[in-house]
Amino acid sequence: MTKPRAWRNPEKIKHCRPRRVTDAPFEIPDSKVGQLDAVLHQSGVLELIDAELAGRPGPKGLPVRTVLVGLLLALHHHRSASLADVCRVLLDELRAPTRSWLGIPDNSRADGHARIAFSRRVYRSFDRLTTALDAQRCDRRRRLPAEEAGIVADAWEDTDAEHKRRLELLQEISDRLILITVRLAHRRGLLKGWRGDIGADTTPIPAWHQPPRERRGLASVELTGGWHYCGGSEEGIFGHSASLLVAASRRHPAGHPQAGERVSRHPQLALGLVLDTPGKRIGPNAVHSLAQLAPFGFPTGLLAADRAYTDQTTENFAQPVRTMGYQLVLDYKQQYRGVQGT
Image (tube, rainbow, N blue to C red; front, side):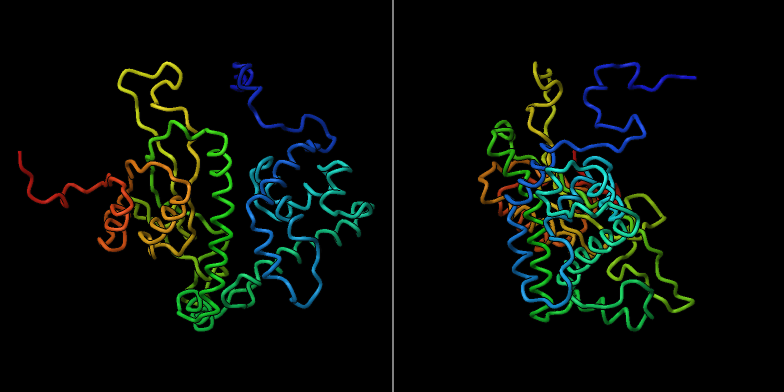
């Protein structure tokens, strides 16, 4: 029997995330809860959400802030975005001071009935948020007929003023959550040695739900999902496509004394993220994320993109990116290179 790698290298143990080693529930430090809560407040998304939910009828459930902090904690400690894990974190892994900060009732874990009631409040609060930001409300707990699902999916593509406003608000919330980490890193000087090089990639985000069934005439629960085909793959992945921007780094020809092969020691942060239906608005989504970086005053360097951006028309990607000052590094197939000279 071989020993785990963490046992072979004791130095890596210090950098591992905390794991439960006993039957007792794991307790998250109050400092980590306060840190993520402060990041959420500094991003400014709570003001946008409260303004959108103001005046909506029905029970409010838990505060949106409580659910979002629980979601961030579940992602950080358990690498899970499931609401069931969020309920487990809020009930069993927080100390009494942090539960009072987030407005969690003291009797929420008294017995099984109280735990079920608390979990329903969590689900109700999250459902209230997603319903307010949905372009077209529908029953997302079952598969809709293909004709009815097509009408709902078209609401995400039409030019209706209210639909466009909700989509823009949803994207603004996403941008603020991504850019708050960039703003904090820039404020602390962590991006001082960065030359402005960016890597652009379109990566699949698989959906938990089943794809549509054409024989039965039923759509998927994920109405805006589609098939994402990676480069060189004949099998598609059902879900969404994420247009991702990452702070890249160049390699030092002789090696850097402190950063090794990299030129600088800046963190390779995610600078932008747009979630969309596969095959739609690939170039404009990347341009949108690049435009959000303009207020920071970062230098513009190389922009390395995969083949999904090579196929974009000039006005959708290459022209606006070059206007911003970036130098494009694109990947072409051998049969698309044309006549080659010496």
